[in-house]
Length: 321
Ligand code: PLV
Image (cartoon, rainbow, N blue to C red; front, side):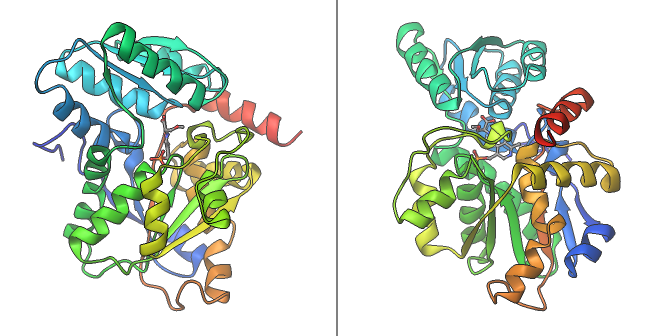
């Protein structure tokens, strides 16, 4: 169902029998992988692009691991303005062509996202482009919050918990805000990252924002070195559980999801799926950190465009060496 207020669609919420069996509770999949541009990012970025270009723009620029760039390129094409997307060398090659197909100018700068972002900020000054941040902006969070509005409209009861991936924390902030809007603020949110792209977990452990020395995970779209301040601040008021899985667990989740649900997603999304596939849900229940029995577990299938069979084969080789 298309949405009159934005570029995103109202995504399906699917019950997964196989994942429910694994988790020992009903698992509902919020299929953000079906969004135009391939991920949930279009919700926030579509909303932000509409607002920030209202009074005219020479073009937008976004630094991205891939998916924020895809969403920006898509929104810019719909708005009829040029888009420049800066991606780091660590992003897989496959995303470059997809960005070009959306009509974007692609620049490959720096090793990780933080380096690419410095270049995007430079272009804002030198080319007078409008900046589109991939995760750290209230308009993005407002757009992402529509996920929870849709859940509220289709679920008869509040979820037992929500599972999502954390990169820079934009999705997390949007979901927390959405939960507040619909009166579900006491629903626990399980925040998943991979080892080596775990800036949120590091911040929680340290009790303050932490900048990782490097991104060593293959889940490049989770690869922000520092989580946004708002995500960290929410960890003090919302019911957030931060957990980290290995790259191999995220990859295995991607493979199982493809096999069982017939949908191919990125490692960034595999991190969230691994909460079910690695047995983490039961472990958290055993530790008393999630209730047993648990109400419906909503997994946000954030999606991602930087994956195809060749990339999957590459990841298998790299991670199983
Ligand atoms: N990816 C951002 C940030 O990268 C990007 O530029 O595309 N799942 C997928 C498929 C994603 O692409 C991302 C973010 C996330 C989850 C995490 O979302 P966030 O950044 O809002 O926490 C460096």
